[in-house]
Length: 88
Image 1 (cartoon, rainbow, N blue to C red):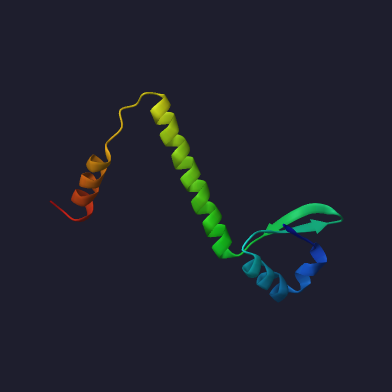
Image 2: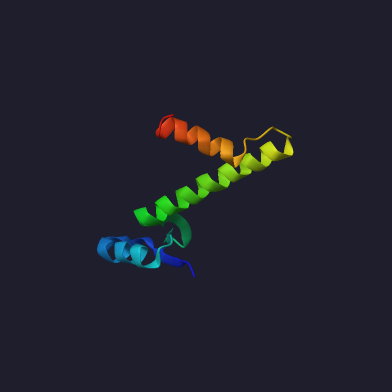
């Protein structure tokens, strides 16, 4: 369940920081009863950004498949990576 806190709770930064790390999800901050800010730990932020990047790449791959684009096989990709990082 999302945590919603009033902006005055930001006075206690240690408590908010601990809450963000403990919950591992965003904490919503309200101002005058309306949504104003979203806080989260760096760990949570990095995970959310990685998930967003993965979702975008999967979306691009789906578009390539739908457009009939010729794709590389897994073996071709592995061979290119080996050549690039390991050498011939």
